[in-house]
Image 1 (cartoon, rainbow, N blue to C red):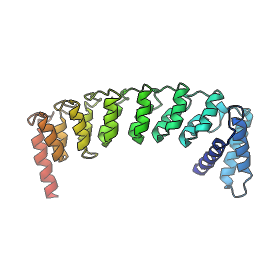
Image 2 (cartoon, helix red, strand yellow):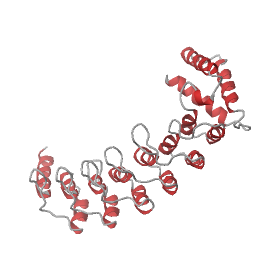
Image 3 (tube, helix red, strand yellow):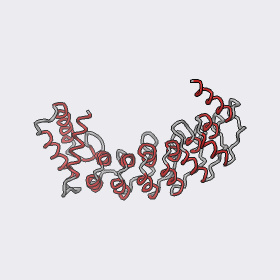
Image 4 (cartoon, rainbow, N blue to C red):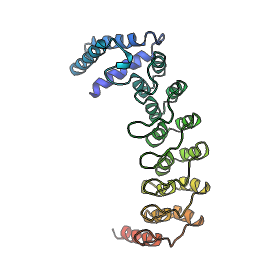
Length: 283
């Protein structure tokens, strides 16, 4: 399967490099490239068999671009960063949202393809089957800052996903400084929005995925509320203490973090600081 898809990628890349590619000849060029590939002597037998089946199925559908056997051609073009192919496919009448090509381009940071899709009225806030938007993909999976800026400029919003998390939650948790700044300044992201677990971006920045002091500093500069509690009753200071993030704890305390607030188990940040220091010292 992997080898077959690699060959298909090569076929589509070859089509995209064609100097005279347009909406009128795009189907014929893909068909010709598949036919040429099938004539190669060193082609793996299983791959050849798969491509022959693909060609046969597509032929039965009269080489309809909307019925390509291996999924959305526009999605494949977006994945491969084939801007010319994407443009020709759109102009041929393919649905610009079919197969979530903008999500695919966003994840990989393919700005030129994304611009073509957006110019053709791709839905910048469309949810895919996982309830994620292109902005989610650009931030969570790719951390592609230029893509983030483009999507925000075109109207992308920091909408929560099915877990109540926004792109700002992802960026904060992963320590993506530039992305956090961009989402706050250009995307008007809510710095205190709590997800379904009650966690804010500040909670996420003090979690176990890294000591993100720069992100914490940015969030505090944007007036993030330091004493908000999640569903476990923990504040960001609880997590900073638990993870032994001394610099973050100091920054939170300077902004008025309450050292005496108790979580649902009645434990304060001091308890976690002492407990985890002892655990790590002993073993």
